[in-house]
Image 1 (cartoon, rainbow, N blue to C red):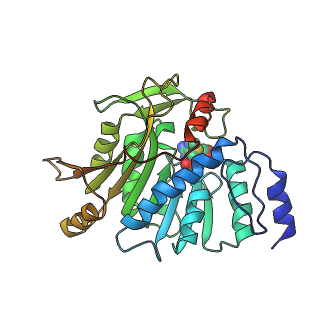
Image 2: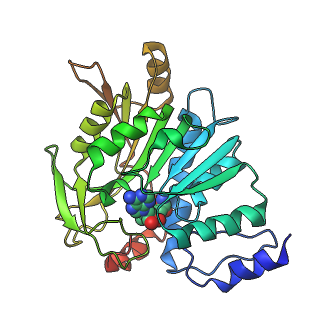
Length: 294
Ligand SMILES: C[S@@+](CC[C@H](N)C(=O)[O-])C[C@H]1O[C@@H](n2cnc3c(N)ncnc32)[C@H](O)[C@@H]1O
C-alpha cells in the first residue's frame, strides 16, 4: 500500500462516494447521506446489471461516463469486468479517481478528461464497450438526443442509465438552470430534464433494440425546484441484440409490460419495483437532500 496516496485520500474531506480503503478506514464524505444513497444504488442497480449483461460481466469492457471519482466503474472491476475507461469533465474529480486507482492498484482502469457532449467517443481507448454506465448525467446535458446516439455507437451490448426524470407522461425535455458551482453539475448553464417516455424515445432513436424501464421504486425529491413537480429517480437499461438475445433478457428480468414501436420494432419492457422495500434510513436521507446538490 502506497502511504503517500493513502495520506492524500484521507486529507480530502468531501468525497462523493463511500470508499472503504484497504486498511479498513473509510473516506470522509461531503454529506453523510451520500453513503446510504450510493450503497443503495450499488446494491440494486449494479446487481441487476450483472445479472442482465449478455455474456455476463466477467471479461466485460466497461465505459463509465461522468465517472466522477470512479466509484461505480471500480465496483464493476471488482465484480469481474476486464477493463474500465472513466470519462469525466472535471479535473478535480479525475484526480480523485486516479488516487483510488493507485490505492487499489486497478491497473485495468484509465481515465479521460472530456465533455461527453463534444468528445469523439470512438477515439476512447478500447472503444467500443460491452457495458456503458450513464449515471447521474443525462439530466445535466443540453443535447441529450444526439449524445445518446453517439454513446450508442460505442455500446456493443448494454447502456445503463440512472437519471432524474420529470413526472410528465408525455415525452418532454424540460429546461432547467444548472448551478455550475456545485461539484456534480453539468458543464453549461442550461440542461434538459427528460420524462420517462422521453428517455425511452431517445434510446429508441439511438438504435437500441430493447429498453428496460425499471419502474421507480419510490418517488423522491417531489418538491425540488426548479426541476418541475414530481421529479424522481429512474433506471433504464438499453440493449443491442437479435430477437434471441432480447428474449433471453426479457426472461431474466421479471417483465410486467411490453410495448413495441411499430416502426423500429424496438421493445420497451417494464419491470416493477414499486413494492421493493427501501433501504431502512432512506426516508431520512431524502429529507436532507433539499440543497439540490446532485
Ligand atoms: C451527479 S454527478 C454523478 C457522478 C456519478 N456518475 C454518480 O452517479 O454518482 C455528475 C458528474 O458528471 C460530470 N459531468 C457533468 N457534465 C458532464 C459532461 N458534459 N461531460 C462529462 N462529465 C460531465 C460532473 O463533473 C460530475 O462528476
